[in-house]
Image 1 (spheres, rainbow, N blue to C red):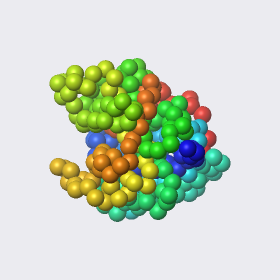
Image 2 (cartoon, one colour; image 1 turned 120 degrees about the vertical axis):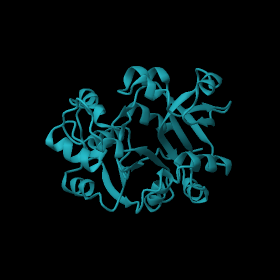
Image 3 (cartoon, rainbow, N blue to C red; image 1 turned 45 degrees about the horizontal axis):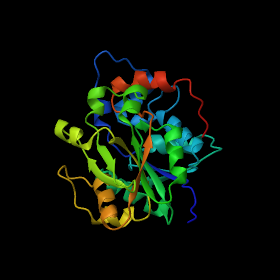
Image 4 (cartoon, rainbow, N blue to C red; image 1 turned 60 degrees about the vertical axis):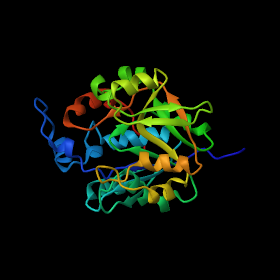
Length: 272
């Protein structure tokens, strides 16, 4: 079976950033950082240059050259910036999610961009190392990149208590996603065992994700969730391989995260 390595990426940048808007005790931001934080546009917070630049540069390092930013109608800050800078390795386009109705709804905004191709779907407030994203080049279908607990504890900027609350994924005998447990309790963590990996919403989706996203009901919090769309796609015959990455993901959820992200990425070279 021959297949083309994936080259399209969808970055979910529509979030309202309510946690980022909150003042954090003992955290001092530059004027530039404060402007982005106050607007709730987490991806544009400067860590030397916008955080999203680092995210996109890592995508390019891993062979993802076509990038679609899912933004809200009000996010001119993102569009104006990326329309104005030079890009030699990636093309950047935009899809508008009219209302913040959840991650699966955001993915639907990028349906035209995806076309018949598989697309990587990631968060805009997480930095996924290129070495994790490169693992997807050898996957013929859909996939989830699962991060080891050890990699997350030692190579991310996320506190252990926050990591413990992240979704856990297990694989079946064929290596495909068997169970995805969100906000697992201690009993679930023990039951899933040490082989379970952490989901950081790093999905490689075939076009089957779109009918699945249209078919799911809203979650208890009234949003359409990508996890529910993935489960539906699997039920409808599109298995998701679990690809294990022994690295950490950086998180830019609130103001307290900024300093640790600057420390981790501040000297990194960025080429878009």
